[in-house]
Image (cartoon, rainbow, N blue to C red; front, side, top):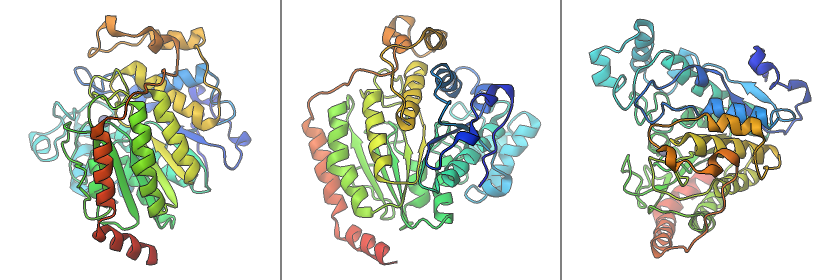
Length: 404
Ligand SMILES: [Zn+2]
């Protein structure tokens, strides 16, 4: 399998292919995310991946653990999951520079939610190409980090929730193609990982587990929602803190994962569950998310870790930069060097008042832990999740799967 770095001046310093050890973690991304954007007046009209790359460069975190340039998925690859007419409609919009009213109505592209912008097709196809590449590179047992991935809402023939193609589905399909018999998908984004669940809900080789805020878009993923048998959901209340995340993981998610016996894992580490995100009301620290992702990739290899949502440009950049630091074994600095602080101090966001920009968002990488009481609602949802887990139908499905 070849690593195909883009040797443009920007990327040259990041690519240290020759020094790659067999099991070193890899970082897959592309400059396309910096070059294209959701225009204005959209929650994703903020820099995210470009800032992460700049911070990792500033911290010299690509030196021993290399950066790999993403590939762009071909039409043939995209139509493995997405319907040919939907892919063609996105291509047509790309060619014409606008979305026809028919496509807008039928495929939900060019809407307020899923806007059309120059470079959209390449950007969306690159996130798929990156996730396919990430799974292939991970196949030898390593962890591959693809923070530009995590477009977990889109379905086969529709754009949904700011997502055009579902790159996560392709990472999972790639593992299956490589002969992996059981893939665990763990979704820690603040929103239910509905698109991935729907894609695999009746596939015995894939267990999807989503921890997300209850009563929030897309309003699916109730605790008793098992999809076609192979989905598990843990909806949590607003204010979800680090202690509650640890409780949910220890008492429900890790036991579910152990019972399934995954041979590979894909983790969606959306940053919108963090305290300070304008589109959720969860209260996690980035350190708590890093700890959980680190634990799951220690337990299961190969592993692909993707990003996801995240609408506060400071907390997103700090979370996904620090996650790479943790995965690649770098020490997280207590305070950032001035070159990194400069990167963070230049950020702006329409959804966040200047007065609400915490000094720590500019000067540090790691949040303070946000420990707190484990509320009765959390204990209750875990109890229900375990009830669902031990339901006879699940037992039969899980065991027939293991025999297959
Ligand atoms: Zn989200």
